[in-house]
Length: 103
Image 1 (tube, rainbow, N blue to C red):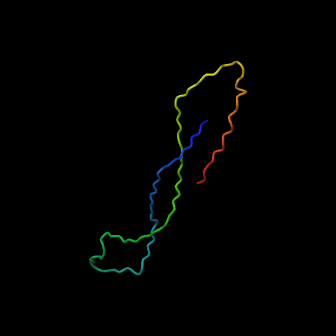
Image 2: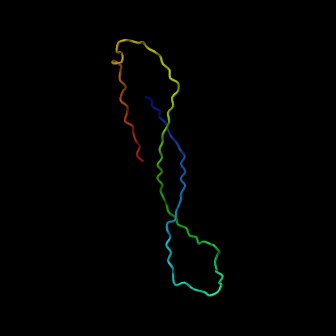
C-alpha cells in the first residue's frame, strides 16, 4: 500500500444565467379604438428595458480524484523453504481511517 500527498488545483468558471419565468400581463384601463390607419408611435419591434440586481451565492460541487499508474515491477528473490515462513511474518499496521471533508 502506498500513499501520495498532493495539493489539487482546478480552475472553476462560474457563468451566471437568468431565465425569465412566465410573465403576467395586466391591462391598465380600457383599449382605445381608432378608425382608419393610424401610424403607431414608438420604436418598431422595439423593447422596453429595466434592470434587476440580485446578489447570489453559487455552491459548486467539485469532485477531486486521481488515477494511479505503476511502472515495471522488480523482485529480489529471497530464500525458498518447505517450512511455513509466512506465519511468523510481521503484519502490516492497520490503515488509518480516511478523512472525508464536508462540503
